[in-house]
Length: 427
Image (cartoon, rainbow, N blue to C red):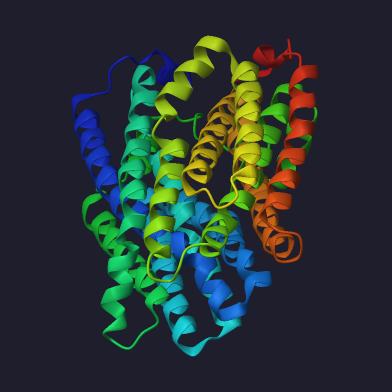
């Protein structure tokens, strides 16, 4: 560990590997983010068409649950064989899931739709792991910037993708397929292409290379060997609890409101232009989530983790207020979705930073895995409930309940005091 911290420049060969790794990751992140976003932008609409409004929120929830649970086999493969096979596995699972969704749209099979969306979530697992791959061989003083480069690549594809949904729908209409199946055909092709690119270009594997360069004792397993064994590690540290809570609450609120926004737009936009409007609104929302992440990271370091978490909580409350009172005003609803994305970004960046630095280094991977799983399941729960709430009480009630979910996080952040012993426990 000491050797890694004190090294200011990697060996020349390692630097070349890192540059090649970053180029490959950036290219594949653009491709996969197009596939993820173009599918999710119409996922609720397709589920509404096949399964009804009550179950429409479960489509995105299935993808979120898939992203959380599929991390277990993907991470296990990476631990054993490196980043490349793990990422390829994640993207192939996602491609197969997207193909199943297309079949479900044609056959109008509700069970097949949800199985496909669950497997579709494997790509989210891959995209999160790709960010870790970006720093496997990075110099200590450049890790944040190189991670941000991959985040920005995600932004490019995610912002552009929803606007391709109408063209994808038009394309498949001539093939006799349901228009809402078109985006998922694009998703399947994008994920398969990303898997091929990674298999061919992510060589040598950055994680395996980093292990070869690490001191003999640096790769030894930590005291916690699985996500459940990290529970007491997180619970006994106020910093870790706040960081994990911020990510879980931010994700729950974002997924719940975002999932049902396309359905809300469908209430007052006709079939002819609903895909175009949904694409534009979700593009703005995703820009709020990712495009300003470098600024959010800078604020997290300058203003402090708790300050950013409190600011993000205020943005989430404002987002729920604006979206819930927008009525049929699409521009105002778009503002609410941008605020929702910004609030999510703040809870994600500040929360993950606080969690990571608040646990001892050997326990960090398990604690991060536990937090990511909790975050994913919280988002899945929010998405699942959202369909029922909108069906029986309406979209404004959904935003009110989402705002109420933020209140405990605000209370926890206001009571929070930094753990004075965490630095002594590290290492």
